[in-house]
Each structure stands twice: as C-alpha cells, then as structure tokens.
Amino acid sequence: MTTAPLIDQACPFCGLACDDLVLQGGPDLAVRAGGGACPRATRLYAQVGATLQDADARAWIAGAPVPVETAVQEAARLLGRAQAPLFGGLSTDVHGMRSLVALADRCGAVLDHMNADGKLRNLRTVQDAGWITTTLSEVRNRADVVVCFGSDVRTRFPRFFERCVWVDEPMFAPQAEEREVIFIGAPPGVELPRSPAGRMPQVIDIPAGRLPEAAAMLRGLIGGSLPAGTATDLPLEALRAVAARLHAARYGVVVWVAADMDWPHAELCVQSLTAAIGVLNQTTRAAGLPLGGSDGDFSADAVMLWQTGYPYRSSLATGTARYEPVMNATAALLARDEIDFMLWTGSFDPERRPPDPGRAALVALTCVGTPLLPDAAVQIQIATPGVDAAGYFFRADKVVALPLRPMIDRQLPSVAQLASRWLTGLGVAAC
Ligand code: SF4
Image 1 (spheres, rainbow, N blue to C red):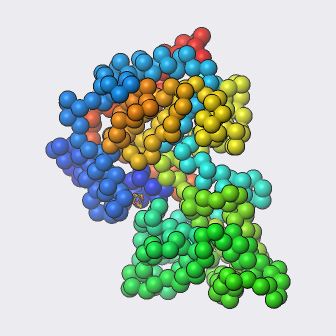
Image 2 (image 1 turned 90 degrees about the horizontal axis):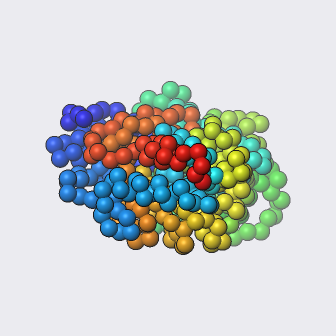
Image 3 (image 1 turned 180 degrees about the vertical axis):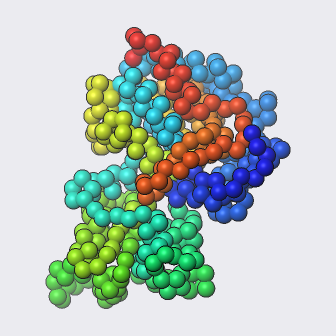
C-alpha cells in the first residue's frame, strides 16, 4: 500500500464524490485529506481512516471482543437460522451491494437503505409524472440561474457551489460572478454560500412548514395558473420575480435535497417543482437537480435495479422481488416485529447507526470509528471503499460511477468478502 500522496482521488463521503482530492497514507496508516477536502471529508477521513493497533479489537460478539473469524462464523450461524431477515443500512459501494443482493436473494431477505425515505420522495414523483433533471457537469457548464429550494445544500453537499456553480471557465454558462443563485426557504441560522467575490445570494424566506405551499405557488406563477388576487402571507411578489427570472434564463436549474424534505407527502412538493420545470421547457431550458447519493444510496439503488428490477424496500422472500415501499421500511418491519435477523451495513459514516433491532438478532458491519453497539449480537469492523478497499461509487447525478482506490491496508474485510463468504457457507439447505 502506497505512502506517496495520491492525487485526484474520489471522495465517498457525500454524493458529490469530488474526484480532485489529494490523499496520503502516512507511516501510521492514517488517511489525510489534502487539497480539495471539505471539513466533512477531512473529519470522516480522519475518523474512518484512523489507525488500528494490532491489539485493537476488530470484532465483537455480544459486546465482547473476539477474533474476526469467530465473529464471521457466529454471524453465519445467526443468518443460517433466520426465517425473516432484513438487510438494512446498505451503506456500501457497488461491489458490496452486488454481494449483499446475492446473499439476500439466497436468504429471502428484505433490502432497505438508510436513506430510503428521502429517495422515495423523488421516486414517487418519477413514478407518477416523470421529470426533467440534469447532471453536475451540465450545471457547471450551462446554468445561468440556480434556485435552491428548501435547503442550504452545503450542509449535506459541502462543495456543491465550489465545484458546480462558482467555477472558472465554464464552457457555455456565464462566469461565476454573473451567475444568479437564489435560495427559497433555506433553513434559518445557516450561513449561506457567497460567490468568490463575496456576493450574497438572493434569499426568499419561507417557513419550513410552508415549503409545499411555496412550491405550489411557484408552479402556479411559472405556469400562469395562479389566480389573480390570490391572498397569501407568503412573499408572493418575490416568488413572482423568481418565476420571471426562470422564464428569462437560458438554462435555469432548480436544486433540492429530498433528505431535507422531512415532512409527510413531501413528494407532492417535489412534484410541484418538477411540473414547473416542465412548463419552463416549453419556452426555454430548465432542469431539476435532486441531490442525493450520500452513504452509497445511489450505488445501492443502481445495483438493485440491475439485479432485481426494483428499488430498495423490496423483499426477495418469495423468490422474486416484491417492492413495498411502505411495508418494507426498516422502521415499519421492526415496529410490526416481522423480522428475526438484521444485517446492518454502514461503511462511510460512524454516526449512521442501526435502529434498535427489537427481538431481531443484529449483525452490524460498521466502519472504523463506530462505537461498540450495545444491541448487536455480532459487530465486525469493515473496510471502507476509498479508504482501505477498492470500489465504485455512483455520484449524485447517477451518470458517473467513480472508482474508489484504497489508500491503506488495515486487514479489514470488505462487505463483498463477508457477504460472499456467507453466501458460500450457507449451502443449499439454509434459509
Ligand atoms: S463535498 Fe462531499 S465528496 Fe466533496 S470532499 Fe466534501 S464530503 Fe467529499
């Protein structure tokens, strides 16, 4: 494993998958984020890529440290006797997810990703009405007006503006300072990004609970269907100005982060935005940019679609995929006490931990930095793609799967290795 700096590394710690990082595996085998890393990447590389001493435990059974091999065998035993398994978390890369889907197929497991709630807000819109969306490169090279709806974007995607909006020499779009950035309903108290010259974006304050109303109003204003004299205490004239600006734009982009839309039926809000974008395309170009892909959710989703034809929250219990986005939610399955085994995978963020498994046996595959989980029957530390395992990671716009290269070697098993091992060990009669 190299100790020389590696340039142009892809970062797996949010959906942007920035591919311009300089990383170095030092003599202590820690990964250091060099040029290009945002605070989130710097923190997570330090946590997830921390040194392990020989004496450090790498696996536990019921909280007691054990050799990894013992934990692997105990997990296999628990999986082998499971009648109703759930594979949750699913925070991994393409290789890991392929192996988990194969294992789930063998066991008849339900598959559900930790970010499925946000993903479904978008998916329901696509199912109902379709949409017009764009890519990070298109935003970078073409967008002249960028409207961020209901999110400051930067909290979850720290380098979005640096990488996609305020860029030098875009191919077709205006230069950075000429681009217009408008925030509608950004969370209060969050510092919004400024342009390189220090220009503040336009901000339209909308209380969080009224974002759906604002989205519907914007749709009505863009489509010309909002009745004259509509009475509202929302900033109607400011929204009217945004509608006019998007109509006049050469390439307007509406950005939203479904993970931030944490309210019932948020898909209706997404639908309002996408319908407005549809109207804009009758006279100019406009597109949506639904940002996601963090924790490997788009990688997991892509593999689910290749391998089963359905998104996550599908059950493979009957030998064919059955997609039930409400019934197969992890929280719903646990609340109904319908599972007896949960395999949890968390490769990228030690803060993302499994829910209380109830009566189910929990086998947790966790990245370095995750504390001991008191509810886990078995816990095994795993390699993280892009830190100490190779892999592929789908970016937020789903058009690019970036290679992740290992920087260090801590002798940790990858998700793919463990899942393949359990698959082989299950034999023909198990599950
Ligand atoms: S913005 Fe996201 S992908 Fe880019 S360096 Fe930060 S965490 Fe990594």
